[in-house]
Amino acid sequence: MDLNGARWRKATRSGTSGGNCVEVADNLPGVVGVRDSKDPTGPALTFAPAAWRAFVAQVADRA
Image 1 (tube, rainbow, N blue to C red):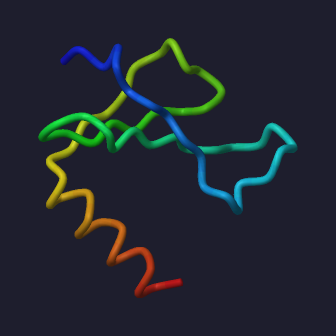
Image 2 (image 1 turned 45 degrees about the vertical axis):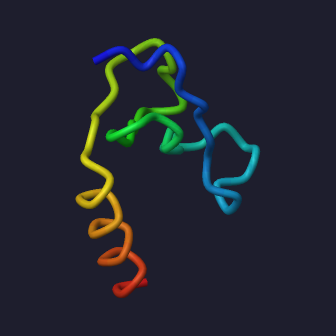
């Protein structure tokens, strides 16, 4: 999958200390990309938007 047009963002709570952060790109049609901020040229996972929303909702419910 081509993620060249992805606009990657980190959670606002991830801070600036260079820790373990996940970046998400949700600006692409029909797909959400997820990658490790420490390896921006490495592999990325892709999810259908509905699957990503369900994941985020479950995480929020358990926080």
